Length: 234
Image 1 (cartoon, rainbow, N blue to C red):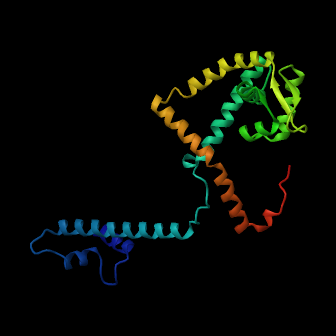
Image 2: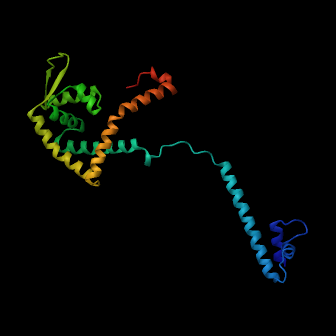
Image 3: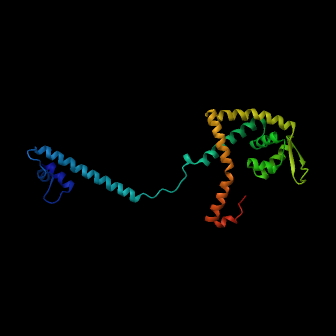
C-alpha cells in the first residue's frame, strides 16, 4: 500500500483520489483487486508516457528552425555533368601529358583539326566552348611544336586559318587509341541500347543550351536588373 500511495503522489491524482480509489471506482463486479490495480497502473503510466512524448515533440517542433534551401546533389543533373567532365578531363590530361607531352586542350583542337583539316579560332571556340583567347594561346604553342601551320583566309584576310601538319596528324592518331580505350571503359557499364540512348539525350541537352542562356538572361532581367548592364569580371 505504501508503494501504491507513493505512485499516486507521483502521478498527481486529484485530491482524495489515488490508484486505490480510482481502481475501486472502475472495479468490474467480482474482479480481484490485484488485477484491477495492475490494469489501472499500466493505463496511467501509458497515459503519462503519451503525454510526455507529445509535449517533447511539440517542444522540438517549436524550437526547430526551417531548413535552409539546398541543392539535392543526388538529383541535380548539372552536378553529375560537371563532375564527369572534370574528372574525365583531369584523368585524360594527366595521361596525355605523361605519354605525349600535350594537355587536354591540345588534344581537343587536334580532334577538330583532324576532322576539318582547316579551322579558325572562332570556329573552335564555338564548337568546344573554349574562349577565343585560350584557343589562340594553344594554337600558338601547337605552331611552335610543328603541329599546325597558319594561313590567311582567301575571303577574309583578317582571319587566320590553322591547318594540321603531318606531325600533328601522327600525334592525333597516337592519342586517339588511348582516348578510345578510355571511352570504352567509361561506357562499359551500359548496354548498346543504353549507349545509343545516352548519346541521343546528350545531343538533345547540348542543343537545348541556348534556351538555358535565354532563360538565364530573362531571370536576371526580372530579379537582378542591375546585373544586366554589369560587365562580368575576368
